[in-house]
Image (cartoon, rainbow, N blue to C red):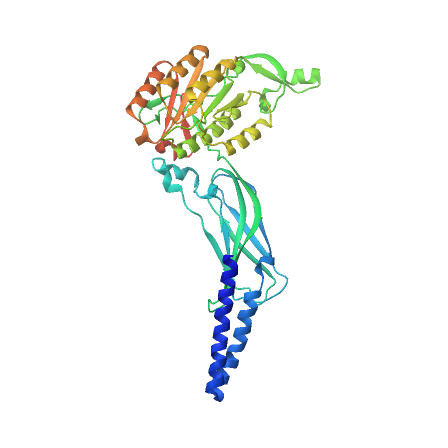
Length: 422
C-alpha cells in the first residue's frame, strides 16, 4: 500500500511540473517559453520511464571467495547484477544486509584487549558500494567482509538503490540472495608449561614441554593416525605384513578429556566464553601433536561427548560442534559435570575449561579428583572481573593437587598462549 501511494505521489509531482511548464508556455508564448518547455520534455519522458522501470526484475547473485574460514578471517564478495533492458541509470548503490550474528568484530587475539568490556567489539556492519552503470546490462561490484566472528552466518539479502540525477525519483528493492558462511574457531598456538610462578598474575616460570615419555616400550599395536614415524617397529611390520608401532609405558595413562563449560549464567562474559572455545580447540590440537589421545566433552543444554580414540574424522566433528556452540540456560554446570563424570569409567586426565568458579564447582572438582588421578582447570576471565572469593577457591583447589591456570587478557593477547598445570 505504501509503495503504491509513493508511486502515485511521484507521478503526480512530475506531471504537475510538466503541466506547469506547458501552461506557462501556452499563456506566455514566445520563443523562450516554448524553448524551456521542449528542453524539459526529454527530462520529463526520462523520469516517467524511470518511474515505470521495474528494477525488481533484475537478477542479482552473490559470490563468496570462501564459504568456510577461520574466525577472524575475511572474505571477498562479488555481487553481479544482470538486467535485460539497458535503461540508462545515473547511479546504482549496492548494500549488503547483514545478519545479527555478524554484528561483532573478531580481530583474533587482539580482541582480548577488550576482555573486561566485550561490548566494544559489537558493531553494526554496513557496506555500501556505488557504481555508475548508464547503459550497462551487467553490473559487478566487489567488497570485503573483514574480521568475521565464529559461527554459522547466513547472508540472505542485498538492497539495490538507484534514481535520477536530480533526486526526484528514487527506487530501491531488496533481493533475496542466500549464501552460507561458516567461521570455525581460531586455533591458537599453545605452549604447555609445568608450573606457575605468580598465582594471581598467571605468569609462567618454566618453559619445559610436558611431552610423553617414550623411553620404555611395553608392546606393539597396529599403526593409527597420529603415531610418529619413529615409533614404527620395522621387524614386526615385516612379520605381520602390516604397519606396527611400539606401545610405550605411559601411553595408557596420558589419555586426556577436555571438558568445556557451555552453561549460561547471569553476568557471563561472552568474550571469555569465546576464549574457552578457542583454548579448548587449541589444547586438543597441541595434545594430539604430542601423540597423546584426547577426547572432548561439551556440557550445556545439550551434552556432546567425543570419545578418546584415534579417529581422523573426530577433529572435524568437534570443530563443527564448537562452531555452533553458544552458552545456554540449563542446570548448573557443577551438577551436570558431576553427572557426566560418573558416567565415564575410564581413568582420564580431565581438563576443565570454564569462565566461572563457585563453591558447588569447587566441591565437584574435588570429588572428580578423588576418582581421577589428575584434574586441571583452565579458568578464563578478565582480571578485574575475578572476585577475591574466586581467587580463594582456586587457591584451595591448587592446594588439593588440582592444576590451576588462570588466563586473563594479559595471557590471551600473547601468541602463543602459555598454559600450565597440565
